[in-house]
Each structure stands twice: as C-alpha cells, then as structure tokens.
Length: 115
Length: 111
Image (cartoon, rainbow over all chains, first blue to last red; front, side, top):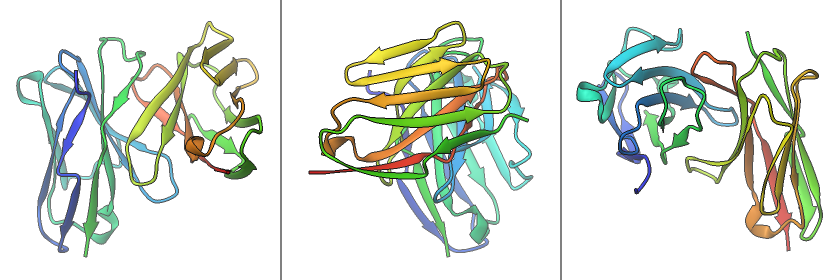
C-alpha cells in the first residue's frame, strides 16, 4: 500500500477564490480525518468521516468549508471565498478501525497560500 | 477541554547524545498517546503509539513512556543522529475520535 495521498501538494490562490483538495486514504481504512496546521502550531482537527458519514465537525470549520467522502473512499475539502487566514497546511489522515483509537496515518499535506 | 504541552519548544544537541522530549496533557482520561515526527514542510510520520493500559513502547532507538495518572509522556532518543533532526509532535486521543496535538519540539542534531 502506498499510504495516504493528497492532491495538490501546493496551492496558491487569490483571496475570494474557491479551492478544493483531495485525499485518498489507505485502502479499506474506515475513518478519514482532516486537520489544519499553521506555522509553529500542532495540527488542529477539522472534521472526520466514518465511511461516507461525516460524524464530527470542529468549530474551526466555518460555513465556507465543506467536506465530502462519497462512497466512503476518497474525500474532498472545499474552501469557498478564501481568506488570507485560511493559509495553512491541510493534512489528511486515515485509520483502519471503527472505534477511533487506532493509529492515524497522515498524508503529506496540501499547503495553501492565499494572496 | 484537553490541552497538550510540549517542552522544550526547541532543542539543539551534538550527534551521539541521548535526549528526552516531554509531553504533558491536562485530562488523564485518554485512550492512547501517539508520537509523530514532522520534517519541514512535510506531513506527519507516526513513530510510536502507547495505549492507555501500557507504560512504554520501544522502536529501535526510540522509547516512549506514559504516566497517565500524572498526565505525562516522554520520548527518549538514544544516540542521536543528524537524521533525527525534525519536529516531534505528541498527540493525545481522548476517545472522541480526534487527536489533540501539542505544538511540538523542534530538534536539531549537529554533526
């Protein structure tokens, strides 16, 4: 297995534009997580999916953010009307179990820069 | 609300030294604790996961301990090498299916 993959690795956009990121988890992993990491900080939880169901969303996930995981495979994270404060590394992780206590395996991240 | 603190924020050592990184958390009701490594501009690599019922885990030159009652974990790195230079992150799983991270310890091992 090649691990968690994310695309694109880097994205530069202008304020007000919409962006979409994709995450492909490790095959047959039930859970998929999105985190955001700003410079000098640890990652912060955004949302997670159990198969195709989005089970929890952080208060950090404003209404400009939306995430999907159709068919319980890959996931997309869309940010509408980007703001400079959205500039960060967006990390995706997956885990095999259904209880949420397994090791989480992280992808390489997508670095977003909003000009 | 769970809070995770890592000390020191940065550490610089000469090659060959043994070192200890510290992690503390405020709520001892955890399921497990995970240590990660992050290279600049990269994603996270899982190093060790300690379940709440365990006291320590070892992988090669790395040893992580957990004292749940006092809310502390340490990561011990033996015989450090320049390739160990990275940021080390501690993350706690409090059973709500998400990880709470510390800000990390930036380690520099000089030849």
